[in-house]
Length: 296
Image (cartoon, rainbow, N blue to C red; front, top):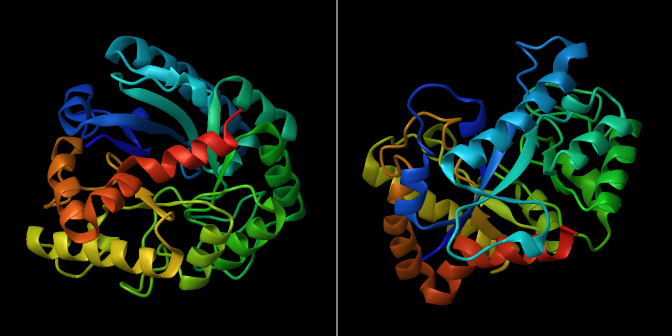
C-alpha cells in the first residue's frame, strides 16, 4: 500500500538517516514531505531566512542526487516515483516579512509549520496560552491566498483556534501530532483541536516519536500506542482526518517503526484495525485530498 508522509527532517540531518531513498522505496512511499527546519537556538534572528533559502537549494540538490520527483502543484504528483514536497518547520524563517514568505513560496515551499518550540513573530507554541499575533494572522491569510498549506503542529491550542477562524472552508493540517487524550503531552492535540482541523477538512499526521505516544517504549507497546492514537483521532475527527507524519530523522529510532522500510508492516496493522478503505485513506487518500484542495 502506497503512503504519504507529511513530515520528516532528513533534509537537515547529517550522518545515517532513517528516510533514505532506499528505505522510502522499500516502504512504498508515494510522497515524502521534507522539512527545512530552522533551529532558532542555533540561528541568529537575522539569519533565519538565509538558512531557509540555503535549505531550499539543498532540497533541489537532494532531489537530483536521490532521484526524488519534486512537487509544487497537485498535478506534479507522479505515480511510480518518490515524490518530494518541500516544507518549512518554524515560521520564524520569514523574519516577520510577508515578502520573505512569498520568496520561500517561489522557491517551492508548499507547507509551513507556524511555530516550533518557542514563541515567534507568528504566535505561541504548545503549552503556552497565546495564539496568533497580528502578523501571524496576516501570514495565515497570505498562505491561504498563495496555496501554501498551514501547519499547526507545535502550536498552542489557541493558535489552532485562531487559524481555524481565518481559514474558512480551506483545509489546514497538523503535520506530525498525536492525541492528548491518549497520552498527556503538550505536543499532542486536544480534542478541540482535532475537531477544528476536521471541520475545516484538514488532516493530522500520526507522529512516530515514542515520547509522544506512551510510557511503554517496547516495540509491542509502541505498536499498541500508535493504534490507540489513530483510533482516538478517527473517533473524534472522522474517517477523513488521519494521515501519516512520521517525524523520521527528527526523532530517535522508534522500536516498532525504525524507518520508512517498516511502513508496509504498519499499513497491514492499520488494515486489520480499520479495514482496507480506512487504511488507504490514512496512508495516502486523506493527504491527497488536502493537496488537491490547497495546492495550486
